[in-house]
Image 1 (cartoon, rainbow, N blue to C red):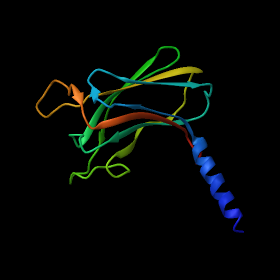
Image 2: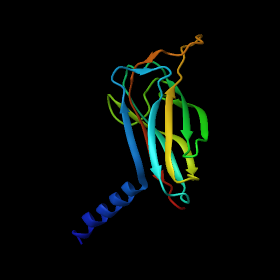
Image 3: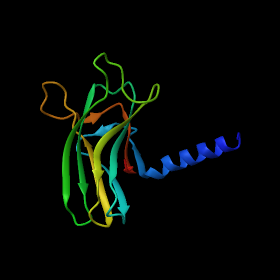
Image 4: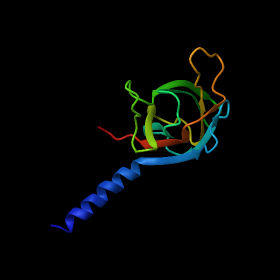
Length: 159
């Protein structure tokens, strides 16, 4: 029986990891410059399954806002582009950072749910920061406190 428990945990861990089909991060050691999108490329042949897409952010206490605005683009292999403007909470109303971790917080943010990739080939995702200071029309030129930006694609589980 005691040999069965580690094997069971191994299978559970393996099944969770197999859901993640793609995960990549880009480091931002000098800040996140305005109008400098971060690009991710995902190659797929699966045109039937549903997928969940997440934006992954790692921030520290230097991040100056309680939320973040992002402009995302998903370009299909046949050059169709879907653009979204997104807002995510980064801190609770009392100022406590959301996400996992101690001095560096990692946030897994819903981007798209139950996506079916209609064509085989390479999908290009771009993520651009669109933060603004209160009362300012111009965006933040070099956003500090976001250390890494990532994209994660998971196969949706059937329920």
